[in-house]
Image (cartoon, rainbow, N blue to C red; front, top):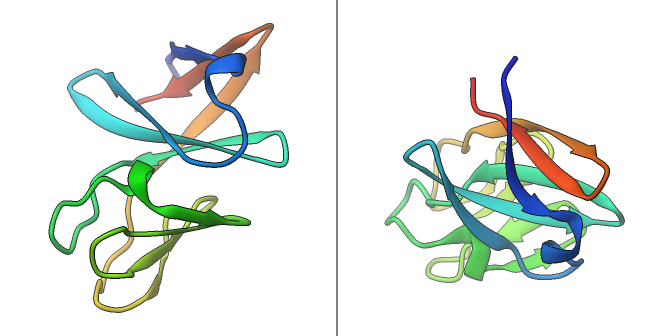
Length: 102
């Protein structure tokens, strides 16, 4: 595993996601009750940014067509999507949020 710094903890408050670009990927970071999740930011349906979606617990809903995804597993939870999104391992070291891109 190779973790890379993507943000500070203070940059990922609870609520809406934070978009970060790292290793050529767009990732969405989400703080749910102090646990930070990292997923691919692009909805597989039409390409919307999931960081712009509504967060409810560990569910994020795409702002364009209401597809939703589990932030912990990346699984799709409702149509119109048929596939989930990739999730990435996250570790917090001091004030650094680090993600494993492998």
